[in-house]
Amino acid sequence: MTSSPRKHLREGPWRTTFRNILILSAYHLGVSPRYLHQLYYHQSKTTQNPKTPLITQETLL
Image (cartoon, rainbow, N blue to C red; front, side):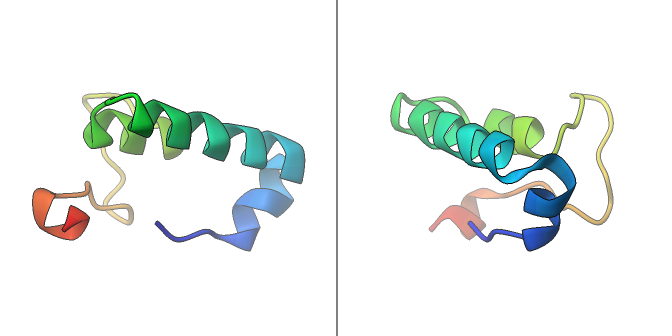
């Protein structure tokens, strides 16, 4: 996972840090990486931003 300073500047450091901790905790509890990706990038299940490709099994290895 990479981090962008733009997200901290746009959404604030506390909110961004809290969301990252929440997503990391959800990952350790077994939540699907696909769902976590949608949460992080604020995407609905039907739309996908072409600039943020959906993670695949290969990228997780």
